[in-house]
Every structure is written in C-alpha cells, then in structure tokens.
Figure 1 (cartoon, rainbow, N blue to C red):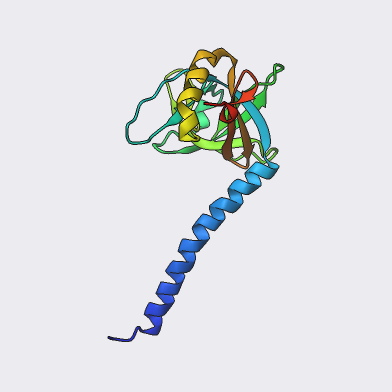
Figure 2 (figure 1 turned 120 degrees about the vertical axis):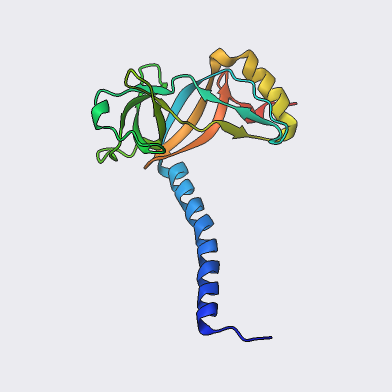
Length: 181
C-alpha cells in the first residue's frame, strides 16, 4: 500500500473536521433559538396530506402567511432570494407577519429569514415550516383531533435572528403530543 502524502492527510483531516462542525453548528444555533428566542402563536388552517414515503406526520399551514409590502420597488425580486419578515402580535395574542424587507433588521431579533413569492398586488406569500413530526402511534389520532378542532388550533414557535422553530401544535389549549391513543 502506498503511503499518504502530507497534503492528502491534511485534506482528509480538514474534511472530517468540517463534517463534524456542520451538525454541531446547527445544534448550537437551534438550541440558542429555543432558549433565547421570542415565542409566538400562529393560527393554522386545515390541510390533510397524504404521502406514502414520509410516514405519519402532521402537515401545518399558517392561516395568515401573507404580508403586504409598502416598499416593493426596493425588494430584490430575484429567484430564490431570501427576505426578512418581521413578526408582530395582535391584541388577542396571535402573531402575524408584519412587514417584509430584503435587509436584515437591526432593532429586533424577532424576525424570520425565509423565501417569499410575490404576486402582482405587492403581496408576498411567506414560506413557513410545514411539517410537524411526532410519535407514529399517536399521529393518526392526533391528526383526527386536529382536523375536528382546527378553529381552536394554533402552532407555537420560537423566533430568533432569522430562525423559526416549531415548539408544538396546540388543540383547545392542549399540546397535541400529549393526546392518548
């Protein structure tokens, strides 16, 4: 067997370190969002998915997933552009997408970095998290309860520095994961 050169060993070690650093970075940023992010409640709308390859999961759609842009002439409308969406809270406690910009907000950490799709009337549809994975044994019963009580359902998320993480889906004030079979 031929011996590896110093350059090959260096490249190998660098690749291995990068492969370890990427998941560690993702874990750290998600943990920071969960610990220090601001909590928001979004109303959800009914949707019944079927996909034989993904297994049992709940598909969620935010009821209000659009934002009107008052300064659309300044937005970068390139394909696959990322936008920064500010999140506001209404008097009833539920959140909504307040404004959209292609520049990162400097006065708050409660914004969501995502893709958005524009329509002709300066309204942008926000791309939000859509899947909620849970215990397969409980998911079919949970989906039935979710569909029956959609008007009393909401999703709880944490948002910090552009990241949005789903904490749970609530039906009638109860976490859907705690529903018994």
